[in-house]
Length: 177
Image 1 (cartoon, rainbow, N blue to C red):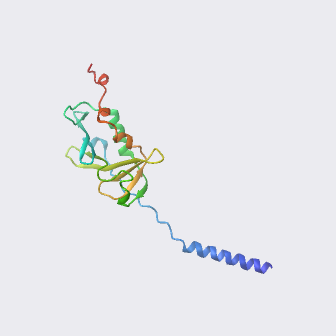
Image 2 (cartoon, one colour):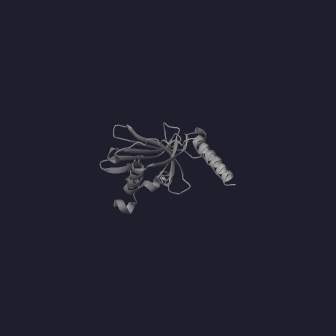
Image 3 (cartoon, one colour):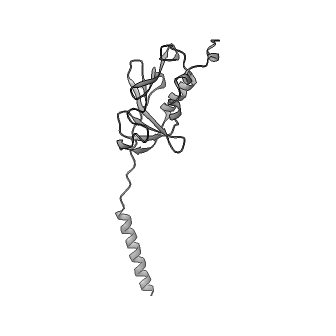
């Protein structure tokens, strides 16, 4: 009886070792490199939905201005909050590399596209900002030249979907009464 138990145990152990050996090794997930920039380099922020520019922010004479016809002062707290989040965002995981899922995650051509440029009109960041993650903290983004959709550790969706008027400085703050 002891011999039977030992043979069964050895057989089970051999099967377990063989099963472990045959399992595929999980390759580490390669994360895309996010563009890094110095916030002082940014002189223009453009938000587009499809081919329509919904917001343009310009940095002139040490102030952020709305790039529409009025050139009204922009709420610098809102601008810096967005730029800080973009500069500091870190990828959490690659959500998909399948372009067929871009629309569902709202990172397809025609969705919200954010472009940051320097004073010589060189693009520092060109990214589609999609849906907020189910954890309510992350956001799905896709670099414009990449099929990969990445969840980043910042809540960007609400910031880029603010109305153009919400980017203006309140009149009481500018001293215009």
